[in-house]
Amino acid sequence: MTASDPRPVGEDDLHALVDGRLEPGRRVTVEAWLAEHPEAAARVAADREVRSRLRARLAPIADEPIPARLRIAHVARPPRARVARWLPSAAAAALCLALGGAAGWVGRGAVPPVGAPPVEPMTQAAVSAFRTFVVEAVHPIEVRADGTPHLLQWLTKRVGRPITAPDLRAQGFRLMGGRLLPADDGPAAMLMYDDDRGTRLTLYSRAGAAEGHRVFRYARADDVAAFSWIDDGMAYVVTARTDEARLLRVAEAVDAQVSGRGDGPR
Image 1 (cartoon, rainbow, N blue to C red):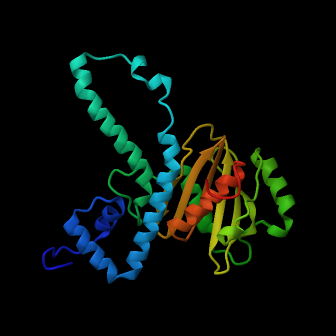
Image 2: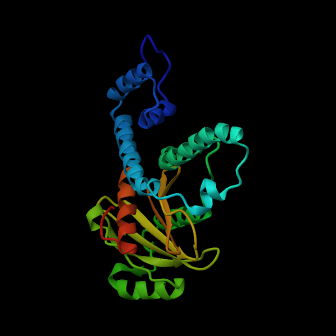
Image 3: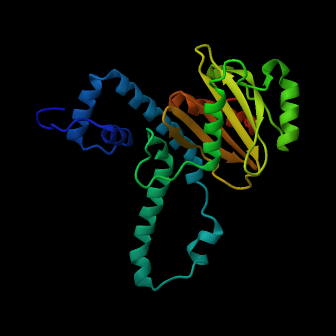
């Protein structure tokens, strides 16, 4: 804080800085504070990278044509005067929703922001499995990576959809193995990876999700972070105790490989 702005710097200030919503005077104060707090500065830099990457992923969706059922010609029109008053508000609301979706990753900590959507059951299940098995020293998995062909055949048969093991060596993770898990509407597969520092990461997947969010959704439960998405009837969640930027790179690599769009971020 400064003599002109004695308020202490808090999480709201950091989020607003990442979003570009700070007033110029407050921005100077926050940036001066960050210069004296390198750990917080590194976290803000990582958050900015995540925001930039998520906005880049959402850009193609923003350019898609409006579905016919949502076009004005297909909607019962109120009187002209009401339309004139309603359209600017609707456009502003749509813009806020779009930007809110891109910035939804910014919520941090154990307590979600007021009005934030609850963590999805699928993500809750993935985080619960992560917490249960990553602490195991002897039996974190059922089938080791040296039995990968058998593991994938077994999981594919039980889940009812092709299960593959993405190659995450470029992101610093190697496959340890995997296991079968129960889920609400059928079994789920969990693959576990680790890196040279002992950080463990899981990829949770299950079938039966006919519709859902194609873009990534970020969630954090205390020290555990997760990105989830749904594609072609399969639901995926990557979970780890790591920063958002690194986990997003992993999620992009997984998505590219399981969807057949390549082996790296789009």
